[in-house]
Length: 382
Ligand SMILES: C[S@@+](CC[C@H](N)C(=O)[O-])C[C@H]1O[C@@H](n2cnc3c(N)ncnc32)[C@H](O)[C@@H]1O
Image 1 (cartoon, rainbow, N blue to C red):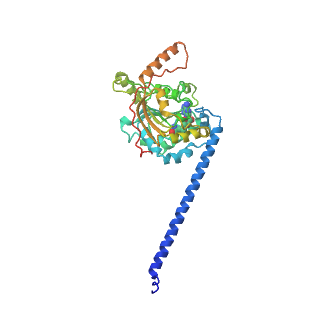
Image 2: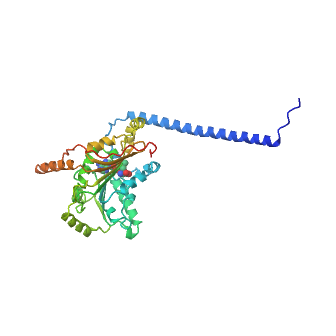
Image 3: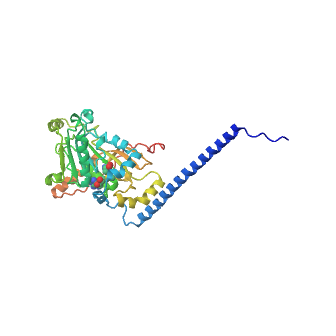
């Protein structure tokens, strides 16, 4: 039998090339696998350590951790910029804030991360979607200071003609304290609250207070006496910036409002716009949140495992719409005042006025059924 012919130079070159590309593929897969498994190991050990640390902390669930927000060394924007970017939260903030009209109050505003999304530009905003006045509140003075700087910076970099013309106020203090933010005539048209409920010891009382401050069905907000009660008397902590407030316009609007009260039939009152984070609809995510909650609250001043739906229900506010994102951990709500709640509050206020007491016990009426939007589609987790 004759010996097999030697491989042609072309065949041996091709097989050497195949061998080399296989090696390259093999080592790349091994490299990526190694990096990934090391990263996962690191994540897992960090998680176990966090769980162990969390268990050692003597901190009851929902304890008041708001003092963490007074820490001058913190830079909240730096802390959350990356994760908010990754979770596309800017889009959620924009959607929410674009609904804010008229006399607007933002509570627990932090460093003013929502400021860039409001319709503050009188040039490009149709009249019926404009913001007339803006009150920004936070418990932490450093946060309010940063929000004010952000607002001033924004306005300084805006052409004169497009600058915000309304009244702007910055109020430091606990927004659930009835003595802090005075109800303007006719209430606030819109109240915005984003990512603050998680850091409150008593979020239900807080939301009920928002229900009082917002415009009730049939009312017309004039915004004339807008401001903060207690701080107005003492002055020091309230800062006001007046970029040429349209006081005359407001006055004439007030007169018109007195002449023509809004129809109560179709009017649902002002809006409370809420963006929050809390429990997921998936058990495994909730287990993860629960295991880390104490440490997270201790470090950052925020309980990330709160049952937001339950809080909203207990507040008695009417749910107009609701959406959830990020495996159900991000909540977007449009809420309306509950007229029955307001009536009950009025009764209590009158009774208390005669006994010259300041504190008002709010009796919450049962939540009126709201139209709840169904769970997001499973693929829309972001
Ligand atoms: C996680 S930060 C959110 C800040 C901002 N709303 C945002 O979306 O970026 C929570 C803020 O709620 C504020 N806060 C907590 N309890 C409050 C209260 N009772 N009244 C007003 N602000 C409060 C804290 O000071 C903190 O700045």
